Amino acid sequence: MGRKAAPFIVEETQHIQLTSLVQNPLITPDIQNRAKAILLLVDGRQVKDIARECGVNRSTIEEWRARFRASGVEGLIDQDRTGRGGKDGAEKQEQMRAYLLK
Image (cartoon, rainbow, N blue to C red; front, side):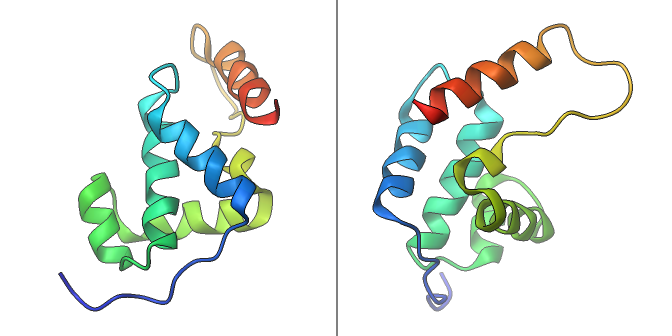
């Protein structure tokens, strides 16, 4: 373990939402992983350590942090992409948004 990074500050309601996402078995693993990464940033963990623990590149953690700063918890949900969509991708995204906004 390296030294602690400066903590990433989130509002209490956001912290509760992030914790709920990580603990809810109905949430997709990719969203759980993003929420976990933000919570680890809040705890002051270094980006390189979080990236290793989450199984992604450091740049991915930086991207998730930027998306969270810009859009809050909803920023952790994938945006629609061009091309052929998945079988139920749009439906899952709407369910996730409904869950987050309740």
